[in-house]
Structure formats: C-alpha cells, structure tokens
Image (cartoon, rainbow over all chains, first blue to last red; front, side, top):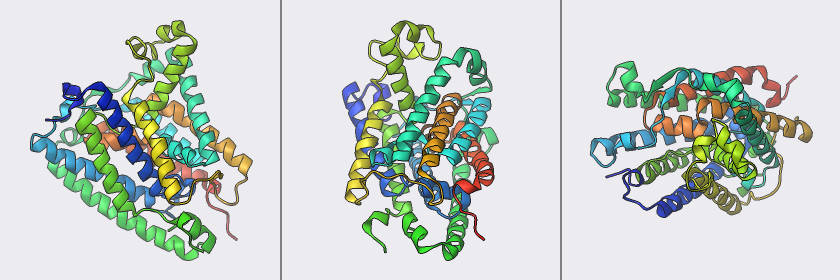
Length: 206
Length: 176
C-alpha cells in the first residue's frame, strides 16, 4: 500500500530517481502544452487563452479523483503523504504577492524553469529574480517574516471537512465548477480570437 | 502561417497526464509535484556551502542543514533537474528549442527583462511566505483536498485578476 517511500517500501536512491523521472514528465508536459509561452500564461487573466485553466484544472481533477478512489480502495494512505498544513494568513498574503508577480513577471516558478530550459531568455531573468527573492527572504526572515509566516496555523485541514460536507460531494461540486469554467474560458477565448491579428493567433497557437 | 512551432498538445490530454504524474508522486514518494521548494533547497545549499555557520544560525535555513546530507539532496531538486530535461526534450520535438524573449509585441526587450526579474523577486518572497507555488501549494494541495491549496488558488488567481486589470497594458496593446 502506498505511499511507498514514507513507509520504507522504496529505497532512497530509487525514490530520487522516481522524482527525476516524474520531473521529466512534468517538464515535458509544461512545454508541450504551451506553459513556456509567457503570453499564453498571461492569457488566463485576460481571457484570450484558455490553456492554463484547462490544463491546470484537468490535472487537479484527475489527481483528486484518482487519489480519492485509491484512498477509498486502500491503495494509498493519504495521511502518510506530504499533506500540507494550512497557515491561512501567510498563504493568503503570499498568494497575493505571487499573483502580482504572475502578472508582472509572466511566469511562476515551475513554468519559468521549463521555459528557461527551452531557451526563453525572459524566463532566465525571472529565475534570477526568484533566487534574489528567496535569498532576500532568508536574510530578513527573523526580523520581517517569522511571526507572520507562523501565524494563522490551522493544522492539516481537509476543505470538505472544513466546509462540513462529504468529500465525494465536494469533488463532484468542484468537477461541475471546473466544467463550467472550461466552458466560460473557451467562450472568452473564442470572442478574443475574432478580433485578434493572425500573427497573435499564430504566436499563441490557439 | 502555421508551423509546428505553434502546435501544442491538447490541453485536456496534457492536464490528464499531469494529474497521473501527481498521483505517481504521491503513491511512490508521498510527495506532491513542486517547484519553489526545489529553488529554496538550492538557495539553502548555496548558503551552506558559503557559510555553514550562518546556515546553522538562521532559523529558516537551520532545520534543513542539520542532516547528514547536503540541503540540495532532496526529492524536489531531482524533480526539478528532470523538469529541465523534460522541457528540453519537448521543445526539441516541437522545434521550439531556441533563444527568444517571450513577450507581448508592443513591450520592449529591456522592459520585459526588468519586469521578469521584478516578478521573479515577488515570487521568491511570496512562495516562502505562502509555503509553495502554483505547483506545490495549489496543484498538489488541491489534489488531496487541502484547504491551503484552495486558499492559494483563490489568492494567486483572485489577486492576479485584480493586478491584471491594473497592469493590462503589459499584455494587451491599446487599440484605437
């Protein structure tokens, strides 16, 4: 029963090898689906490109439904995995900072790495920025960030339990919301496409 | 003109395969797909290599350097090495492997690079404060129905839409 490595059913070297192999798949899919094109990423905020929302929500739904059934069938014990604790205040504030960074920088950390690897110079600059930001955070941690980062600790919280509904119902509701979102963003992209230049449409590959 | 360079994999197929990778990451390693955590481990490694004394005295770095291995010997760092290789592979297959600056056409190269660095700095800070990025915090968090993943989703994209409205001219050219 999974997860294998946390239960010592997989030796540490193989675990890292699996990490690298999963990374290869992740990097390949990010590039192949267009996440290395900064204009396609920014398109999620303006509606001219629906790629990000489709890939992102489909990935989340696939994993969510798959892991839910695996847990139900006893193939994996989710409680033994990396299950993030919720610190709502720093995540909300950090998320806002990331949202601004997304609009200004046109990437996020994962997409910038695959973009830089495929030769996007702007992504290389973005990565320099990320490292500067992380070093800056580390050097100012105890004076500026420590108390804020530790605030709002709620422990490990499942959103369905937090709302007070069954997990299966939550997944169903999220699926409905995702499908509605796909439809809205597709319509939005279609309306943009009618007034865009051929050059832009080709650049975005939509 | 439509060349192979503008061709992308179907979004739903790519998303489905990415979802399977997340399941594999949880099943084999008990990890979610992540990115900013790997960047952070690289920073820890650099600091530890330059000044082990400082690394041990900084409360943010110390927990990660006390082990018997280097701070960069982590699942996330190996995963990121894989990401680099996978992206090169895909870009080569699609004929996109070349040095270019991605941007909206009306933005100058210089401006784009400065903005990319500025945006990167914000991500560097935001990820460490918020405990992860779009991959580790949001995507992998949502995959296990963690509340933190949904807070991250709403914060990054919710505030993103507000900031996008303010900074519209960075991506959309003013039309007459």
